[in-house]
Image (cartoon, rainbow, N blue to C red; front, side, top):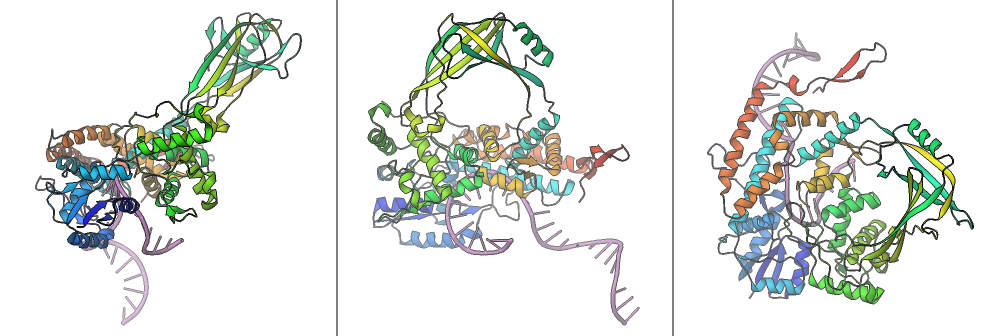
Length: 596
DNA sequence: CAGTGAGCGAGCTTCCGCTTGACTT
């Protein structure tokens, strides 16, 4: 007896192969095997059926042949692609290629790659869920229509080679709108006042610093003191004031660890902590996932779980092992009484995989440092710490606020001590001790200095890889496998340029294209377009609606609008001339337009 | 007669999402 099991990733195939033994052949599909053709629309629009024509992707043809050969030799074939919309479609395409009816195909799913989970899944096969496949087809067809009708429109009206799409055009729009906020930004002046205080008898080792916090019982907001004149009045008012502690407030708080990484948060951390681009972070994670020789007898060992995921769930096995690790390394105080789980789902999450975590909690970053290069070590440390911290006790903090009153004014000094490090033991840099000296209620203090400081409000920052991915994810736009490539696409199309600080600045072309799309195709580029699409896809997946009518009701108004704009709108309208500045010689305004 | 240039037509660009190498630079 031989059973062929098909999964999406070759690394996964290798791992599962070990679990299942020699009666099973585990092979991977390398993702999607069929897709719409590249050079034509590949959708029956004239006939009104929207029926797609799929072709085997050229880079997959060799592999598909191999799968066919293996299928011939197998007694049973099990489709074990990911449990999400795309995974279901991959199984459906595979079934088609291997000439198996979807309603007869044996389909299994699992959310964690452990022996137990795989064996359990094999005991409970189902068939291919055609409704879920239809939801994927609707998604695919919609994206093709939008991309392959809107892009040629841009070639005609703006410039050749441009592109538009449900995801990338929104990404570009975000950068354009941010850039305009920056340009329109007018800095505002505001002032703060710091007071330094000393004890009257025995002086403090360091003077006590407190910030002006409230006037006449109303707490001060950031922009309340706008001008130097206001500050001067306050300073004059405080000239011979006496200072007295009127309130001491102690509060103990706890800090819980953040959830384990998913693709988006890993990319954000990689960027924020080490300045890695989204692409770079993913390449490093891929290396750790595929495995590294760490000197043992096992050869290559996969160090982390799958890196393209939107789920914060982790396996029972990890919870047990992490707990044991924490207990052995830090002691009972540092463990959690019951495993900590993170339930909050991100928008549009499909949760086919685990969170990104180390495959073995006992493999500390230090213990394998010798086998990793500098960047791999940094990436692994981020992932390991974040995952282990989730199963450690809360940190406990003591916060103190001291109010020092003089006339109408209250200054506030704050202090913080960490009474129990908990998970922060993994992040020593994050432990802040801000000690206050011994103070008591009604104690009078000497003011040794009043330091007024002028500030100006700052414009919002341009998007980094981290903040752009975050903005897209919050709106449910794009998927774990596309965040990094999307940034690559908008760079390649010259919609954004990377500044020296690695931030993304939109180009003139991006402004022109965004204006064109916002003014004439508002619904497509709307931040909620994807969310609306997802609602429809859910209805299809639940069997409440058929996919073709949904595409049809979208397509006709979209296409008619496109035809209308094609005749109504001239190139000149699209490329509208913009004033860019003033000629220093003549004093006359200078206009810019985009040429061919 | 040879070289030049206008004019015309053909072919190309493009989406999102799932996976890794095989290619260049």
